Amino acid sequence: MHDKGNEDEKSFVQIFIRKAHRGQGEPAEDHWERTVVEFLNTREMEKLSPAKATERAERMAMATLWYTAKRYGRCPWCS
Image: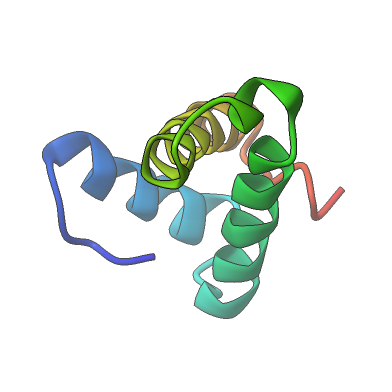
């Protein structure tokens, strides 16, 4: 998880680490990876190539975590 990429990705990293995890990068990274794995382990992903599945899981994880971080100021894994 890093501040590189397009503006949406940068904004997500800023909000997810700084707001939802109070600046603690290590738990934010762990929670990001856990969320991506949760999405990867769905039936929907079985029929996709590994690259496509990973890309889709990352997009879904970002949308989910971004929403909770922006709206509630927290991470669902920390609750």
